[in-house]
Image (cartoon, rainbow, N blue to C red; front, side, top):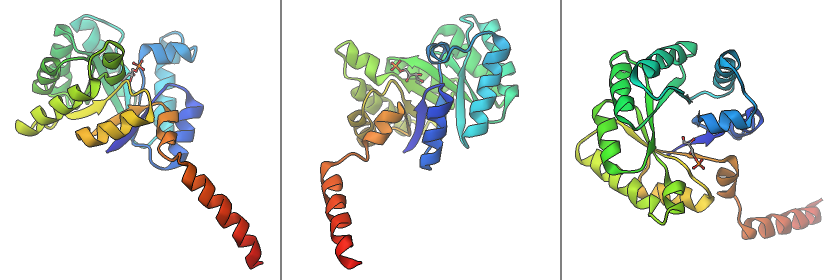
Length: 217
Ligand code: E4P
């Protein structure tokens, strides 16, 4: 399973990249705003900066909500860097934009996916990734991981090439559940990835080994 880090923070992206297991980055307008990125020039520069840090795909979201604006922005974003994946919402205009961009050989990530039907239409339009939002479904008393399982099964059954990118991952256990569900990618906060390493028996064992190694001097 691939790991993307879900942030627009350059320090965190560098830290994830330095860990050596990072496959890409996802951003969204909320994450960009959190970093204080304002204005078109600064937004585009920030995406290029991210691409220059990581080796893999970098999702950059369109801000328009209607078709013409989405494709104009999508073409502009895709021209920035070969690693850019144009992120488009799962709406009627979004599906049309995904179809258009796919025909231009531009990678897309269909975002804000909350149902199997939305994922199906995105895959039929040729999306590179679909992003079901696990945490936000859980927040609304709906099983987010069950949706990942449903979409993985559907894509396997029909041989869709679209990858299931589990998004809105909130904690380490979500990552393990996404692995079990067969997600292709999980986009996570860095803390959730680092949580995979956390185990008290590792800490206790290492402390003992360090102590005993002093007897070998
Ligand atoms: C996905 O690409 C989104 O950026 C993200 O995962 C949303 O997560 P949140 O629900 O924690 O905001």
